[in-house]
Image 1 (tube, rainbow, N blue to C red):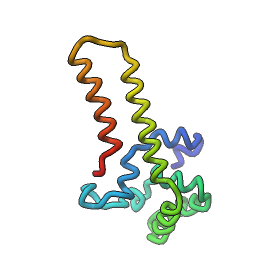
Image 2: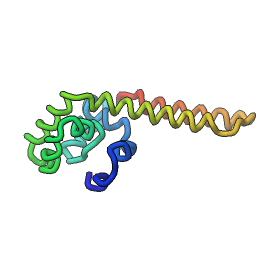
Image 3: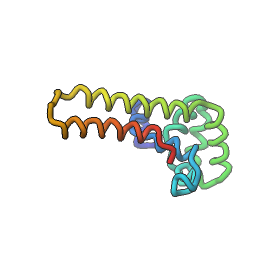
Length: 133
């Protein structure tokens, strides 16, 4: 978090991925790791940053760290009270659309391999945004 503290939230958020959502919405079985593992390890991801926007008190909880399970519970309470997960999904979709637009803006090519590769890249970003594990 300290690395991003001198940047706007938009800049900070651009570094996060849809995986941030899965840590809160996935199961241990679907993720292949414990759910909520990021926050339990002290990793502050996009949904929590969005919650902190709405609930500035959350910043002090984060600064105390997540070694105390009560701080994890408090952070999760704030998370469920806001649109952090939804906003993270929307951000991921926005970036997915930007990737697709960038690929579409490349010079046209009649080479079938180039066409297939471009479509594969677009498909890959869509898969990343819509996956659930």
